[in-house]
Image 1 (cartoon, rainbow, N blue to C red):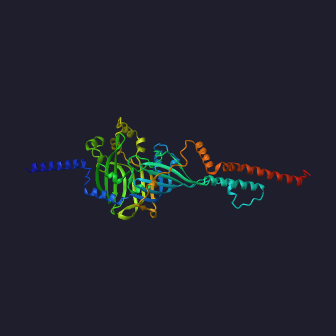
Image 2: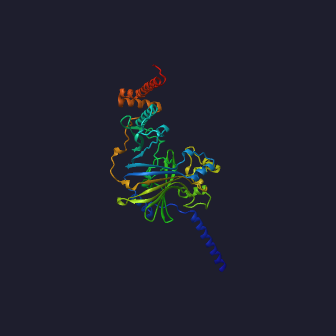
Image 3: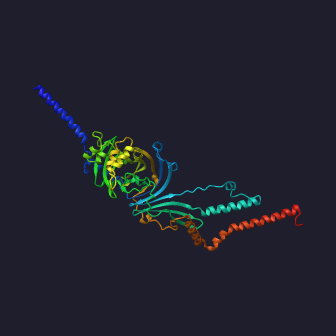
Length: 464
């Protein structure tokens, strides 16, 4: 009897162990939208980022990661040294309202000064005819440089009703008025905005792989309202909410998982794009793609990008905006393109209508260090310049028709400017400008001739 009891206890313990193992393997990685923690974080984000308009001045800083550059070289990838960003910094003015925005970048031109110009000051008094000629030539060149150098020059990016238009604004002394020039074709896909402060008020990338110069098409609150899975957990003192959505990309869908971290003070600490296979893939297929026991809800994963926020300022109605945002971009393809095993995975899961993104990301997520930090960028908003939820006229975001259209060649541009100059100054003024060098040359020749006659007559007696 006792032996049978011991045997039953062992069987029971075995069942408990097996049940525990199965339960761990079948861990539920989804919770309903109406979960208290889910609703709390979504409401928190909607309240803090209830920003209809923003005006500010900000500084953008871009850095490529040196270790990433070394890794590229180590993996045999070509590195364009000229394209590497080393602490590049630029300050902009920014106006945003209702999905439209205007970004203004001042342009500073630096002109190389010749050695002759360095040796001549504006108050130089000529001591001989040679210095007089050089000084006149310098004054002429200086006047031409000022005349032909744009002043108060700015590059303006207008984004209105979903379309981008880029204009170059400048004042030209030569034309005695301000001009605007079209820089690229309207809504040109190759010219995207260079790091704007909308990332600081909740706008995110909508794609997994997206150029750092791309626009930000979706707000985090809009993303949370899309149909998809939710998962909540706590880590390192942060409340973490993940939302997974399959977004349509033409004829296929792409899995996009966005995770938001909230600290103990209810500030948004970071938002990141991250792919967890166990949260996206059904269990039966997950077992086919990954080795049993090597995964759970939080592992493995691939990070694509992160926004990390700090230095918060509070405004009316409990709105909080980080004055500093760090944007981190990761490159998972560096390992894929240099690893034959990973290339085989991509080839295996390609389909006639496009690749099976979920299967590919699931398989390559198993490889260590798949996410390599490649670029760090920072947005520093100037606190004293920040104004939110102020009414901004719609015409602010409408690009003016250019005075100087887009040209296919430099010859076309020169011909257009020549005609524009004639319209501004008139034909006679243009002819007068063109004849000025000839007048100076003839006058100089006459002076030199008279000096020559005087010298030869006095010292050599010629013409006596």
